[in-house]
Length: 103
Image (cartoon, rainbow, N blue to C red; front, side, top):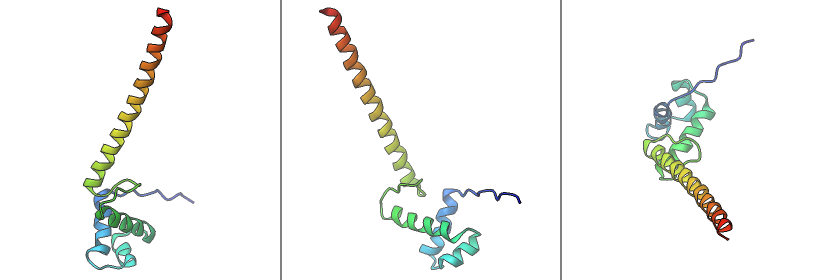
């Protein structure tokens, strides 16, 4: 018995599939059959696209380009804040060492 390989889908494909339900009036089972994807996956994509269209940033990987950019920028801010914190702590440590030596 061979193990079925997990398929991956591009963000564009997910948007197209979810748009069938949200914009063109397909039911989730109809759209899932026509796109050859599972209903559960399609339901997640539909829910996520609704959230993204509402302007909220999803916790999962974003589908829309705008939300993808927001996620990239949030990740960059987070990384820069961590780096700043490390540098602040290192500076304080170096300053305390310098104070100890000058006494």
